[in-house]
Image 1 (cartoon, helix red, strand yellow):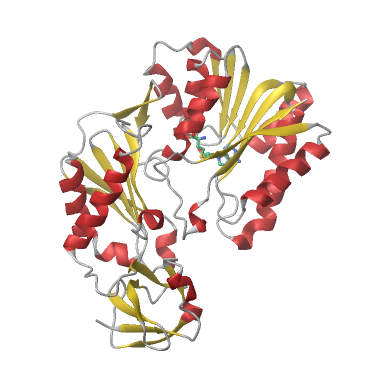
Image 2 (cartoon, protein in one colour):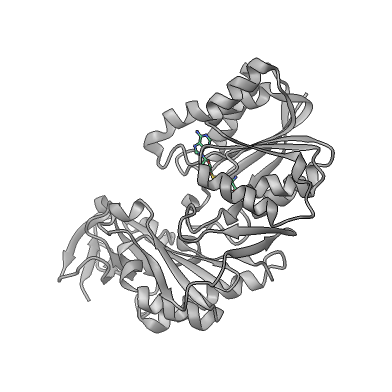
Length: 396
Ligand code: SAH
């Protein structure tokens, strides 16, 4: 095994169990290692720190598999780690029996670069790092053994693979493709999942709890769901008794799936739902001009700031939609607003929303802080895992 030897003092983050080693921390590589190979990590004084996946093309030069310098990284390791991640979820009552569930949440589950989402008896696997890519076979075998799933689809087409020098890979890697459309039941609502063509692995499972909360708030309310994707929030609002739900997304295929999802739920009042294919930034301005208002507004935009470098432009975009959101909110109304940008922390996000309320001349207060569901845990040693943050804000 090649040895990755860190510069002096650069072992501190490893000792705190942070899984990433940046290029600037790495002094030298002794021996030969190809992308994804397991290397031994040593401090400058040659103290052994653990084992990591080497990724020469990436600024994240290595990702720690283990902080135990004697733990073998082999098929048995992945079997153990995958089983642990799945078992962890079974201990949480709110996750037990969920049809749609994130089984492995990468770094926060001790498996850097590995995401696995289960939709019924189908698992979707996404590998985003050189190390994860190298261990595909072991990971797939571990998933089959642990979950007994009927099939696995690989959706390794995230942009971040490019940073690791990896090509996109997609396709069925275990079992037969499903005979018909894939559906899950979430908070009492049926949802179709397009694992091949949908966003990410097909669905945004991280918002499960927040969608349920929206349902609980919706009785008798007029709801505006911005960036609705396949209608997850919209359907919960209808199920909760909203008097009307207007949903906006710029993606035609997402809206087609949203309409199909509504049709899967004949118990919902379809006549209360309207779908609009539009740019939210423009649509909200049009509503403003037309004097339209709502009791409950959801803003769940895509990642405006993938990294801290984009934070400033992203901040302006968040400010813009939140300002418009406040202006369209009826007195006493609720704004449910999110950022899933890693580059925008909670503190900054709250500042942006506060600035938006001020500019909209609305007195408002946070009544709840929101985060991802429990199957998207945040490793305590890995604060980067806290990408999704939300605020439920009530305005006078
Ligand atoms: N709330 C959704 C997830 C939203 S993902 C859920 O619970 O499933 C973000 C969505 O924003 C995507 O569907 C994308 O198509 C849409 N989108 C991105 N930019 C947009 C824009 N400027 N206007 C409208 N929709 C946009």
